[in-house]
Length: 205
Ligand SMILES: N[C@@H](CCC(=O)N[C@@H](CS)C(=O)NCC(=O)O)C(=O)O
Image (cartoon, rainbow, N blue to C red):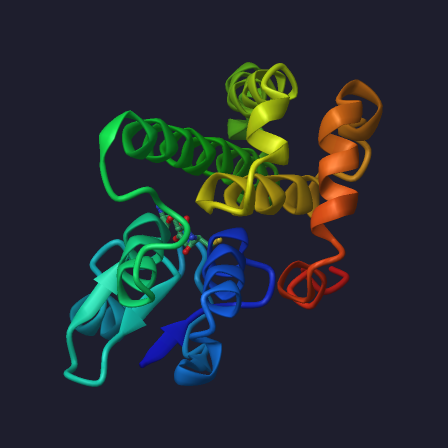
């Protein structure tokens, strides 16, 4: 299978970590055929992979395409026998809900980034970007208040969370999350001891 990715993408980082933790990484070829960024034409990608023009995407050997890191993570987990997402019951829905929230936190941070990087200055709307950032920040408040999530055996929630924290370091280095959230800081330190997490840190901008 092929993973369409880019090194700075936090969503693609999540999939690389998942694949490494599940022992599937050597079955995946990494490719980065497009520059995934809004207001950039990628017609071939839109036609052949996803009309949303987002990465990551997983292209199976059969040619089937799986999009959205949330779905790709579930696909890989199923392939590996279900190690990162509980199979059923309340734990399954709790983990899936947290995974969704973490997706939304990354989406919100990416919107902030695009707002600052891409929008013409005359159209900037600081209140809108601040509101998006606050959604991600409030997500951190949620996980700081639930240390059980941070200490249980590795699952997709912890992987999603480490990708959010890594993206904050990468694109919002002055936001002060470590000082505001000491439990998340300790969690991040612990996660950084994993090869999968350490080797996928986004490269310096
Ligand atoms: N929900 C998607 C979000 C993926 C996403 O936003 N990826 C960014 C890169 S980090 C992207 O492709 N942006 C291009 C664009 O929005 O045009 C997922 O989880 O895979």
